[in-house]
Length: 468
Image 1: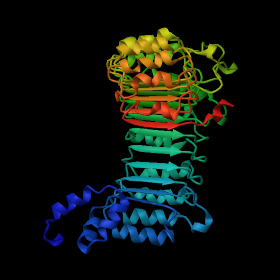
Image 2: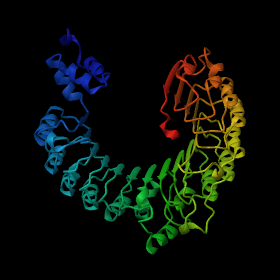
Image 3: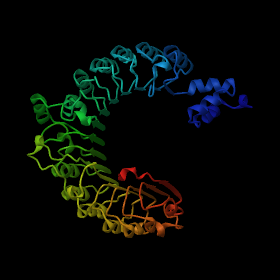
């Protein structure tokens, strides 16, 4: 029966099977399916089961000749599982996968700069993601980018020995990079990103996360400060900017970027020390297309290093966003553990300006003590709100929670570690099935019985150890 079907139809059937295990089972059904699957398979994910690694990889690459995406991960690896893929394995990969455009290496601790250099012949490689490849340095990155001249995506996560010298400058001269993610790479600081030079104008997505334990170890040198101040950092194409544990200081580093992203759609500022009202106001005035904003205010917002600047964000920031960002859909505001309610930067007045002026579809608060039942009442007029998440919002009571049934389009509600709400607050929802999903976690006064029938789908979990 299968032999009667045209190739195009069989290919269509195979393309609809997404799970690798299902594809493997299907390819064993007959020789024809096996052969067509070998031709069509474009992605491969392997890891600890690859033993002996180099021989097994050679066999897989020979079988699947049209691979474009390869992921090799050794998460959870132990020596008894056999030797990891090494530098020779990457040479095999470069020779046997000429069509490869996307490569991810995670926890590959046997791979060195020599192995990364073996990939320089992969002329089509446009995306490289390295996660905890501890033996790779900046020299290895440089040898790769020198050969892979169409690289548009580069992600480095916990690459502890990669410093930021020639490879950043070389990428800057290529002007191909569109997506750069650097997370917890201790040798790379915010100030080093100036070396991207003219590539800033091509960059669409930047994620930069500093290891919080090394936040103050990377000190700006005078030349780096001068370059940030003198060089025009063009960020016209930046769509997404995510900064975690960074130091935002006037005239230095990433502070120079915030007010220049006129096409920015998503901003994520997580525990960034030194962010001022003027930074957010400048961002709001420039980024009229902003659709999503995440702010997690750090607990250590008064530091001797930056004492000359007002470091607390206020309602002026939120009002500027509400006034200028007319398409804003998602707002998430959070406070780091250790903050006291009296230190909350934003009052209800600032939050209400966002609710009243922006077409919000998603709203999330974590330890925002200024958001109370009055804020819940204001949400009755939020015409577009679909998702509401309240985490440790202790000023919300049953009276406010009972208003949820009056929210016009709300379909998802998450309540996490809220002390002031109980089963009584959910009673108006029981049997109405207004909500698609209700998720309740670690709220001591809400019982599993109290959530039954309060939504089409209900998730309940209670672990009260956080209280003690």
